[in-house]
Length: 186
Image 1: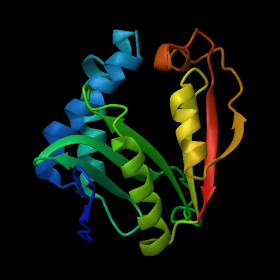
Image 2: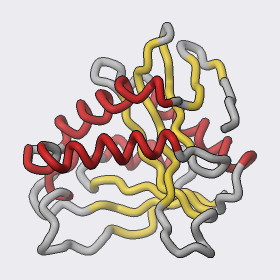
Image 3: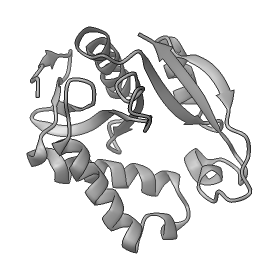
Image 4: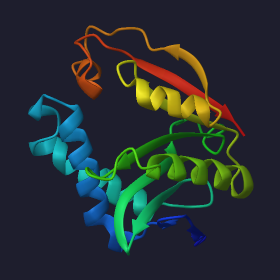
């Protein structure tokens, strides 16, 4: 694991480790609880799955797939994951999905932007990745503007699914709200 530390005007970005898991997971859970109105999606067995998923993601970091944390006074206040999104072995190292989470009370202060820019710069310089993807709720106009400002191109909205009960509850969207796919080529 490469340990890159980048100073920022009000905080520090560094690659997260297993010791950061509890704070990282709490930020994720707080963000999901605010975005999803269906507790069945985050409770019980799914909660155990999500905890294990992120614990494993921390342990599997390599030169392509990393989780970055933004720290203010040594306190984790946001994180950015660059995780695999392609299961075909020949394409595994070329595509990654980015996700950004910022703790309540720290949003709209540039933390998410700094994390996103840092992850893009690291992927360009230190990985084999060729494309970074992001999925943004069509109801989340703030994040749509942000990803476009940092160089992502809007690809297309995902078609509506009759089987999905999650997407319509992201970022306060109406039932049937869709995710929009964004991509940046490195």
